Length: 145
Image (cartoon, rainbow, N blue to C red; front, side, top):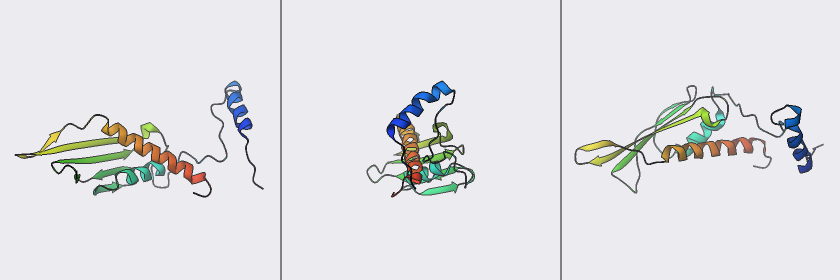
């Protein structure tokens, strides 16, 4: 028999939890934040691969949690290329368990030269990966997805 939790019950738990000294009530239908079958957080790993998978991959190490792309040239700007390194640092799905590094180069008369990465690029990549990882975690317990 399947039990359904009413919103009133959840609200009462949330209101009573601080008074009881506990942090956050753990719901039975919540996927665990720590998935470690590959040595790092599997949600972050999968989300990182999904996010930068359109770029050519130079190195992928699931045990070390490192994904390094090769140089990627966008069809819209042929005189600019980027290289991305994503590192998953922990087994728990948290914002500080993810590190993204982006290198950018532009093509000039003397060849490729280092250029500054546009403001917000690293932050947007991290937010995209974290958002996808949270979606994967939710989908792990949502029936019918």
